[in-house]
Length: 292
Ligand code: HEM
Image (cartoon, rainbow, N blue to C red):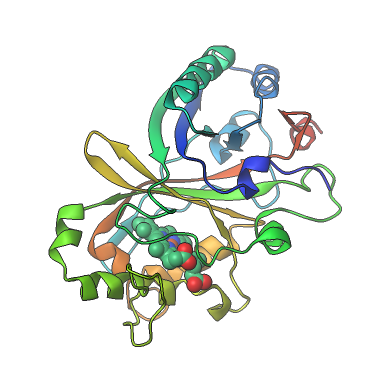
């Protein structure tokens, strides 16, 4: 199997910068692929959106646009992005320089549309204070959940990632009692224990990976984001397909039983998109799937 992008499996870094690029309308396929080949994948995870595949007239089996949805008073937006970067590091200055250099390198075919800064909070906590990632699969299980295996050489080592920018209303969250906050998640903030008797709306009950048929494991690598004093979670979930993400979100928005996830009491999805993360070789994207 080809090598997957290493940042997918590594734990989240101390600092991150997310970059969203738009392809220039006049950029031709060869120019787009040439620009993609300039990207160095060390400390960087790169995802290609369906809209970019459409632009260059290519398709990737299993790839599609994130559907916009609305159910039970909840709106899940779809905000397509052509090319997505998750820059990983521990020095904000180094990330800024890297972001600038990527913009310069790609300028023949792409324009920067937006950026968000991400960070690791305390011991891998969401900014609400709850530890995030506890039930992530590890080692071989993480690879099985997140990476495309199989014999198709050009796609093996790929991953599909769902990215959603959730914005929290922390004033509202802090107005709830600790018991109510713990009930929203289904784990105690104090000791991270998943306790008995949480409501059916508890987030960990909505998303319990073994409770789906087939089981719905995914590799979450989310990080808190902030801009001015706005904040929330940049939810990032890698899968060998979009099945686990879609199945879980479907239950979160109450499509199975009318019960919506407690998270929606204080947080909403502001942006969301799907990406295909190609495999890598020698610190470069392996793009044979786009060149056939
Ligand atoms: C505001 C956004 C979100 C926050 C703050 C959040 C936070 C958390 C926290 C604190 C946990 C418990 C610890 C852990 O196992 O990681 C958790 C578990 C989990 N979350 Fe989220 N989450 C968010 C959105 C989502 C979304 C959109 C999905 C999927 C569509 C999701 C899927 C999961 C899964 C699969 C688990 C583990 C469940 C299990 O098997 O026990 N989360 N999340």
